[in-house]
Image 1 (cartoon, one colour):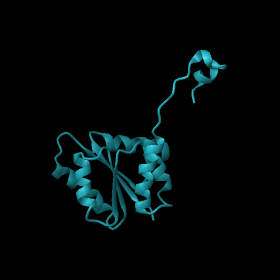
Image 2: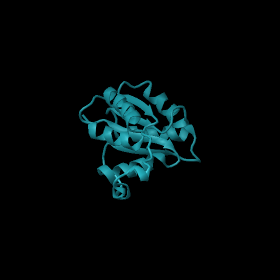
Image 3: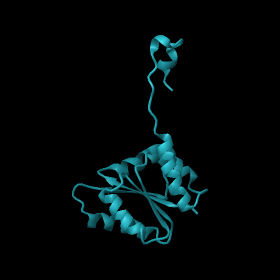
Image 4: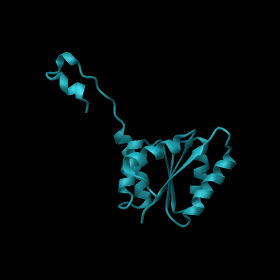
Length: 145
């Protein structure tokens, strides 16, 4: 069974991430985006979340928040804490979200939550500069990855 993923974050984080995912992986009916706008409160955010939950009632949900400890995280934690079919992660990047979407069918909800955390850690890298004078073929650098 596919798990529903609800992206929640400050500003346009959620809709921006969903837009990127839709562009790269295609539109996904199990992916939802809830932005925590400047004029929102924790109460209005909770209402937005419950509106989405009511669309997918009794289905497993993975909340993905932008940062741990922020209002979106706290509100989602308050909901997920009392529901066995909900998990919550924070601090994920686009790469890990894409990987999680592609693994959605193969993992349990608990496994999916753990998978996305590990994928976030593994997909974050530091680019190491190449000294052009040490490269035999400068064309490789100019052509990109």
